[in-house]
Amino acid sequence: MKNTKSKKSPTILIIAAASFVMLLTATIALFLSVEDFSRLFSVSNFTCVGDVYFHDGSTRYAAVKNSDGLISVDYVNPESNNYIKNLRVDVKYSGYGVGLIRVRVAEEWSRTSEGIKTVLPNTVNMPYTIASPYGASTGNQKKWFDNRDSDQCFYYATPVYSSSGTAVTIPLITDFDADEIDLGAISSSSALNIAVEVDAVQVNRYPQFWGINALPWANALSGINEGIAA
Amino acid sequence: MKKKMRSVFVTLAAVMLVLSVSYFALLAPTTAWFYQDRVDTHEFTFGDFDVNQTPQSLNIIAERIAFPGATRFADTGEILFDEAAHVIEVNVENSGDLPAKLMVDVSNKVGGTTYGNTGLRWCVISENVSSFPASPSSTEYTSQISKGSYKSAIEDILASEMSLHDYSDFDTNNVSLAESEYESSYNATAKSILNQNNNTPIVFPGSGLNGSLKKVYVVFWIEYGDVRDVLLNNSTTRLNDYGVSVQLTAVPNVEGASLTITNNYAGSAMVVLKLGNKHYEGAYTIGTATFIADGGEITLSAGQSAVIRNVPVGTYYTISPSSDAYECSASSGTIGSSGASVEIIAA
Image (cartoon, rainbow over all chains, first blue to last red):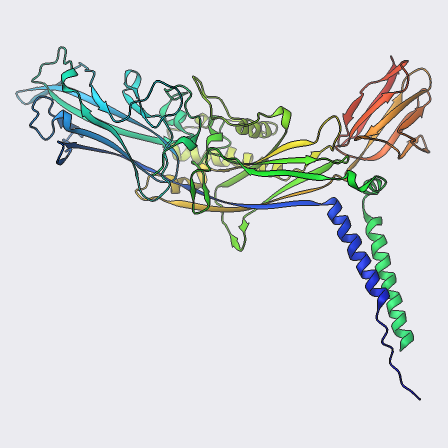
C-alpha cells in the first residue's frame, strides 16, 4: 500500500484571509484620516539689569552709589571722572523670555548747608544723548522712545529676547550736551544726584505691571519677531 | 487525514467569511447608508499644517519654540494672552458629501521621550473660515489694546459654564492668598471646563452650501501659576522644556438623528430633499409605512409627517417645494444632535 501525503496548499484559507484583510484595510482607509505631528516648546525666565558707569573716552569708572542709593554726578567740572558727559547707561538683557524694557532716569538737585541737605523742587530738562532715538515713523523700532514728559521713562520700542546664552546689551545714554543744559533757577553750586531704574516686564503683562493700556509709541507691538536677539 | 484537513480549511474559511460579513453588519446603520453612495463622496482633505510663524517662531532654542512668557488664561484681565500663546493653525476640509468629525488628541510624548509638561495647557478652537479673522491675534494696538481673538474664543467657552473674573478681583495685596484663591476656586474650574472641551469632536458638515472648510487652531500656553518659580527673577537663564505630539483623526460622523417633514399645507404636497449635494434616495416613513424617495421626492398628504431616520449629525440638507402654492419653513439647514424639522406651509 502506497502511503501518500496530501500537499495541497490551504488556498481557501489564504484567499479568505487576504479578502478579509483587504476589505478591512480598504474600509479603514476610506473612513479614517489621521495626521500626526509633534512640537517641542520651552519657556524661560529673563534678567534685565542697568549698567551705569562713567567713561571719559579711554577709561571706564564705576558709578558709585551713595548711602541713599543715588549716584553723584558732576555737571560743572569736565575733569571729574563722574562728569555728566561721561555718564553712560546700558541695559543688559538675558534669557529667552520676551520682555519690554523701560528706563527711568531721575535727577535730584540739592543744596547742602551746614550739613543739612535740602532737595530742590526744581526739574531740569536733561539733554542726554540717546544712543538710538525713536524715529519719525510709527510701529516698533529697535530704538528708544523718549516718554519722559509723561512718566520720566525711556521705552525700548520693541520686545527683546536673547536667542543665546549671552546677554543683549542695549546702550541708552552715550553722551550729554552740556551746552544745552538750562538750569533755570537752580544755582550752579547745587549738587546733582541721579537714579537709574531699569524695568522689564513680560511682553504680555505690561498692562498689569506698568498700569498702562497701551505702549506710548503708535502701532506698538506689531510683532515680536521684530525684537532684537543676541 | 485529508478529510480532516479539508474540514479544517472549510471551517476556517467559513469563519473568515463570517467575520468579514459581521464587520459590515456591525457598522452603524448610518454607515450602511454611506455605502449606498459612491465611495468617493467621503473624502477628508487636510490642508497645510502650518505653524503660526509669528510671533514666536524666530526664537527657537535647540528646535524648541520658545514661548514669549507664561500667562493666565482664566484671567479676564490678561488681555494680551495671544501674545504669549503659541498657535498651530490647521486647515481642514471635508470635501465629501458626508458629515465627519475631527478629534484632536495631544499627548505628552515625542518619539521615545515623555515630557512632564508642567504648566502646559492647550485648547482647540474651530471656526468657519469666514467668521474668524484671517490672522487672529492681538498684535496691533494704537491707542487702546484689545483682547485677542484666541483669548476671546477661550473666554466664550468658559463663560458658557462659569463666571469669569479679573485676577485683580482677588486680594492682590496678599499675593500668596490671591494665588491660592485664583487657583483653587477659579482656575481649577476653568481648567476642568477646557479639558472637557478639548475632547469635543468638531463636526464638519461636508460639502454643500454650508461649506466644509474650517480652520482649527490648537492653542498652547504656559500657565503662570505652575511655572512661577522658574520664571521669577534669577541671575541665570532657566528653561523648562515641553514636548507634545498632536494627532488629528477624522472619521465619519455616525451619530444619527431624524429629519421630520410635516405637511401643514391644506392639500397634498411634494418636496425635493437633498442631503449634501445629492438627492436623497433612501427610506422614509409616514406613520408605520416605509417608502423610498425617488430623486429626492417625498410626497405627503395634508397633515402627514415623513421621518427620515439616522441621518448623520452635521449633514447639510436642502429642501425645496415642487409647487409655488406652498413653501418650506426652512429651505436648508444642518442636522443637529436632536434632529431637524421642516414644515410645509401655504405660500
